[in-house]
Amino acid sequence: EYSTEMVLKAGFIYSSNYRDSDGPFFHRVNGKDVPLVELPKDSLYDDGFYMCTFCDPLRQSMKSPLEAIDMMKDEFDGLAEEGGRMMTFVFHPQLSGHPGRCKALSEFIGYMMADRKSVV
Image 1 (cartoon, one colour):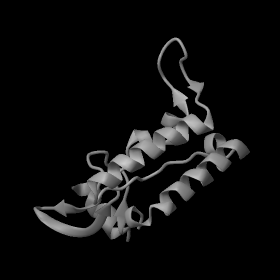
Image 2 (cartoon, one colour; image 1 turned 90 degrees about the vertical axis):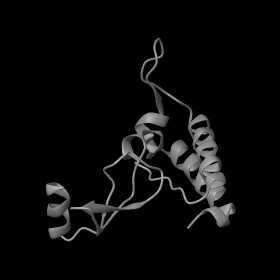
Image 3 (tube, one colour; image 1 turned 135 degrees about the vertical axis):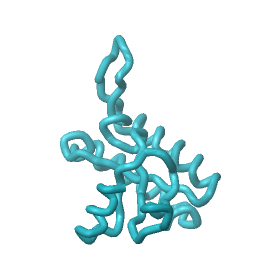
């Protein structure tokens, strides 16, 4: 709670540090909601996770852009079916910034936008 109070005093209105939900929520300090929204993230939506595999014997080998985007589409569809859920992405330029990966990411954005009822 001490660090949440510091973040509030610094003027932040959102945080993306927690991994305990797939929907936004307000932080609480001393049992009361405070004007700090948490936009939780998940390792599944970090390109360091979905662009790589960490399983032996292929430890840390890159996935193809299309395989990574197919994984993201499956996650998006699952969350959209539940309703009221979100995906908070983490993209690193050294992973997602390459032309082939940018193209696949653009395709994924188009896929999400085609389902506008699920996208805010």
